[in-house]
Length: 184
Image 1 (tube, rainbow, N blue to C red):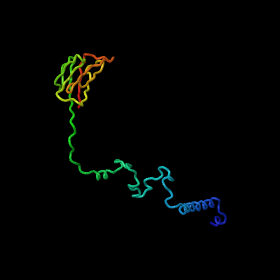
Image 2: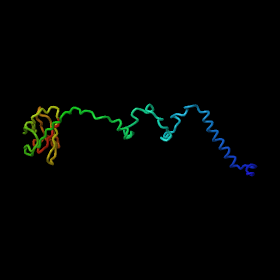
Image 3: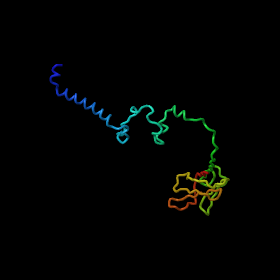
Image 4: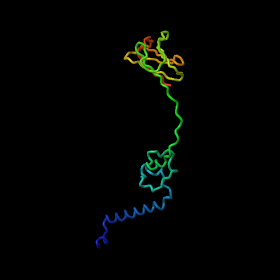
């Protein structure tokens, strides 16, 4: 001990100075920085962690609208927000689907049409249903593996015309076997 008091080493001197600088710097910051002078502009992104915040430090006013998603809420909170089930609402509009399966010779194989036959003048096959089809959408698909496509359209208020279109764009008078669905 006597030797340290007579001649301090370089390491002892530097560690003593470092302690005074560290204590003095903290004191300086505490004394010279004005209250509330460190804000979001001075903070590095991600520097404030959950453990740095006190309980209740962030209130609903500090959150922007829509910042909390349902997945952020605990199961207990979600359960407390759920109210009793209300009365059932009115039934929605019904969907009327009319359908027909027509064979290669033009015969009705299945579905609910009330008439079918060829319209030689238009080069189409006509399928009729006993209902107003206004506002409905007909769709026809070929049943056999043949080239071309089908075009289905409303021919009148209660009939659908189906025309087979060849790959060159001409009308084929033989529609072949097809399925027809009319969705309303």
